[in-house]
Image 1 (spheres, helix red, strand yellow):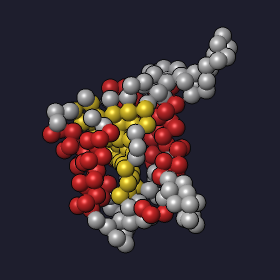
Image 2 (cartoon, helix red, strand yellow):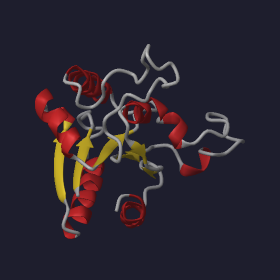
Image 3 (tube, one colour):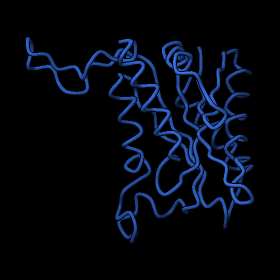
Image 4 (cartoon, one colour):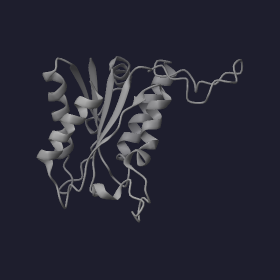
Length: 196
């Protein structure tokens, strides 16, 4: 199996250096390599080549987005990455071929033009927010919504291309109440359960 890990951390000097996201990226890499799988990586902040990123996506069985949550989504550099890479994949007709609808067959639904069926996509995210505010109807901010709801704009891109969306993983309360060793163990269990 081939795994693509995309790290979308954006450095803010003296505030957010990216060490935690790199730690989880390296943990996932070690997890898969120890089991005999091939891992390819992209660190968006370091730059990328569009053709190479499209090829990475078409060759990977599982794509993992490792991201901090900045203002309730991935950093802006990830949106730029997706716009560029997925537009290239659409233009080359390798990630998808249109939106799935045709004039000849009106029963085909919007969002069924993807070519990545049988492949999987997962988000691993680091959050300042505490875990208990998600899926909690008493949460003032989210009113019962979970992390999957907040990530819909990200996961929809992959589903649109035909990927199966795996449950996301989160490391919560990273500034005020972190327990990184426990989170790393939970992450390994999550990868074992959903990615193999």
